[in-house]
Length: 570
Ligand code: B12
Ligand code: SF4
Picture 1 (cartoon, rainbow, N blue to C red):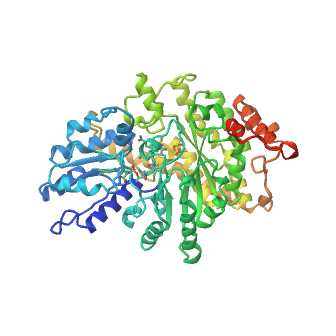
Picture 2 (cartoon, rainbow, N blue to C red):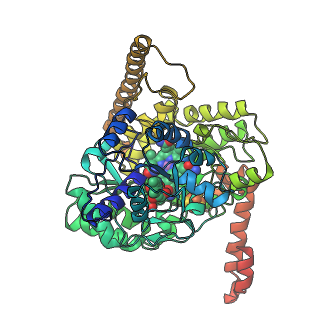
Picture 3 (cartoon, rainbow, N blue to C red):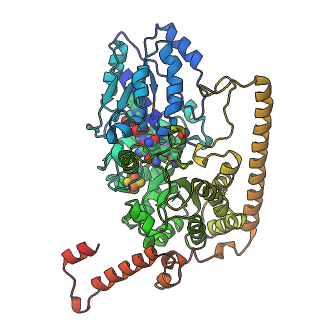
């Protein structure tokens, strides 16, 4: 969907090292970025390339997540065997070193293979790694977790167009900031990037937009996990507005925000003017008991409708992450909650994830300390597999409801409703159709989450996990061609159906007047009539809490409760 931003970040830093000639005036640096999400990594060719310079160089495995760690080791093994120097960084190594004992989970494999581990952020530290590699003396471990850099005025993420062009929609990315103040227990980000907001300057953001626009790229995924808590959000949006409205750069932005972002004055309106077309919201769940169990208390279900309507009324597509497997979840409660979301929340795209104890999170650390068995195969830590036991669902039930959730939400009836809502609110329907095709078919057709989806799978019979038997190319290729044809045909059918539906709705003269419960503005009696606010004990308690706050802040005769009391209640 987008090129790896981690790769773009390190590429930007490495390019800066080359410009500053950190290895001395005599030595130039040649950088070749490869993203295995969209490029076949030809290890024998890489080994040859290194051989040409007597193995002078460094193979850097960038932004390696827990689910990618086994594959990263598979790539490293033949490189190490050929004597190539290898370093690895990213969330698995950083998360494990931040939260565990320095050996878990499988970090010793790096030590055994002689792979240098890098924890922390490369800004300000990459020179040293390059110099050590040039001297043939990489340290076994570089741990800068206690030294997270300010990222203002550091090299900006960047990838040349030919690499960006390997993704759908030619969208690039940048992180305008890092760090989030909240404390969700399933989150790895706060333990790796910290809770303090660190941000790029508006000048840096302008520079990277211009660098990309010079190569024809104007669409970006801003990867801040919570752009609303980037302390510089307003100055950055103002600069982007300038570039878009005055200079005419056709910016198209995707941002990630929390469920209270709409309360920041000007945030939604400025996001719209800056070119935000899609907003990803960490909704996670609609049951307050589940949110409290995950320490996600900042998510107020009583605000969900206000928040979604604020984005919707700007014609911005809303995408929400929804986690299945919180303590109060059962297959029936999940079915009920999806129905409530469909009927009462003006949300476009809902994407499901398993609650996963990702290495680097507080949840993982807790289970690890207690010695509770977790999934041993790191490949499965992709939020698409059950990796820990659930108290109210068997693994089978959990897996079944995960698959069912996708077909429940993306039912033909609800897809139609979403298109009616889009036309009525002035949303770009063609853009929504693209997302709907993708989100409604990927899990069934490709059996992966839409974030991991693409147009063509890159498989090769010579590339199998170590230990698996080789496949016969004569069987592999016909089967692969047939499989590809079948999948493409399913996608084409879905696209045709969706476009037909879109056209028929757009032709309907009444479409602009369409409304339903989800699009209805928030009313005083919502708390009495909406299932969202009445069906669970947690929801009823949340409403009672709001009412009580409201009563206390509207005492007669100008009498206000003492602030300390309000604090205690909040
Ligand atoms: C953008 C993003 C994506 C994008 C692009 C991937 C990418 N890495 O850019 C996409 C959409 C593809 C994606 C997908 C997924 N992602 Co993602 N993604 C992110 C996100 C939001 C931002 C990544 C980023 O740009 N960070 C900023 C960069 C600069 O930081 P960085 O990656 O840590 O890199 C720095 C350092 O680590 C270091 N460094 C990194 N590598 C190396 C290597 C060397 C040699 C050196 C010296 C230094 C070094 O230098 C870099 C610059 O300072 C992160 C959360 C986050 N805040 O990072 C989640 C995150 C990385 N994703 C995560 C997950 C789980 C996934 C998915 C599996 C599922 C999902 N729903 O998101 C999928 C599947 C990916 C796959 N192919 O298997 C987890 C990983 C947790 C873990 N323990 O592994 C994270 C942390 C979010 C979370 N939920 O906790 N993701
Ligand atoms: S709001 Fe998002 S980034 Fe912040 S702690 Fe929670 S899950 Fe992590």
